[in-house]
Amino acid sequence: MRRADMVARLEDRRHPWDMVVIGGGATGVGIAVDAASRGYDVLLLEQHDFGKGTSSRSTKLVHGGVRYLEQGNIALVMEALKERGLLRQNAPHLVSNLAFVVPNYDWWEAPFYGLGLKIYNVLAGKYGFGTSEILSRAETLSRLPTIKTDGLLGGVVYYDGQFDDARLLINLVETAADQGATLVNYVRVVGMTKGADGFVDGIVAADQETGREWTIPARVVINATGAFSDSVRRLAEPDVETMIAPSQGIHLVFHHSFLSTDSAIMVPHTSDGRVMFAIPWHGHTVVGTTDTPIGEPSLEPIAQETEIGFVLETSRRAGAGRKDLVVARTDVGHLGI
Ligand SMILES: Cc1cc2nc3c(=O)[nH]c(=O)nc-3n(C[C@H](O)[C@H](O)[C@H](O)COP(=O)(O)OP(=O)(O)OC[C@H]3O[C@@H](n4cnc5c(N)ncnc54)[C@H](O)[C@@H]3O)c2cc1C
Image (cartoon, rainbow, N blue to C red):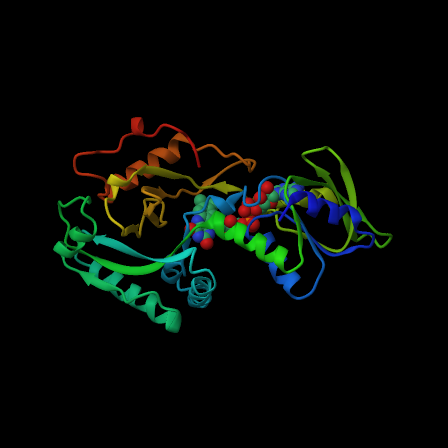
């Protein structure tokens, strides 16, 4: 894939595209793969690098959503577990099986999470990643050697998927291109055009490298800009009501010694009622996430002090971290997301 060839295709086009997709994240690129493989002429435009938005900053989990199971949303969990299985089948170089341990410090946790995670595995059917098991205290410590031992009763282990979000995204860009789609990065959509009937019939796009602008007609325009969707909607209708309530989530990246194992930790209940993970990742440990309402979405979000404090506090309460190393605010330097 060469950008210059893609730009040349865009410039040579003399008739409307079947579909223009705005946004080169997981949603937009997934749509491009799907539409191009059905024979449509697709143009996808991304204002920055492919995957610059949320799609390269996830917790790297391909999961059915243990949290949704707790909420009783069985249909959603089953669908996600099936997709998880298909993803491992289609991209085994990017999706792997990861053991998650829920450490138990209360008597009711082993039967409660033991049963819940059994159901999780049963719902996966033939797409299962492995049977969950109740662990003794010693077994829990051998899987999670760094966790707090005071009051530890045992644990539950279950299996879920881990993936490389940025690489999967790039592989999907390549797949869309193989299927005939035209995908160009560093092109920002800055306007919409409308036909006599008042419907959108194309877009105006600006090359971020050269400043050159193109008016590009299309039968269908898809807004796949994630958290930025409202600003793109307003290109067509400036007075349209806001749909998105933006929020951000952060991760902190610790030294591998924080976990010292290939298993992950799942904290099933944070103080704000969500789940949190500590996950081995490229020789480090990724811990997160938060869910904090923000005013405007940004391509370079900044971790807030309260979020950093929340992740550190939840890690400490969950008992994660080397016994001889209590992770403190001073250990967190760069405020990256
Ligand atoms: C903290 C966090 C952790 C998560 N963890 C997981 C996880 O472990 N597993 C999981 O499956 N999901 C996870 N998710 C969810 C997942 O990351 C998102 O659902 C997914 O990335 C959304 O993709 P998207 O394509 O809709 O948006 P994005 O990836 O944000 O893509 C939108 C793109 O649109 C582009 N754009 C915006 N405006 C324009 C314009 N005018 N012209 C051209 N391009 C434009 C942006 O540059 C951006 O690249 C997580 C989400 C968060 C926030």
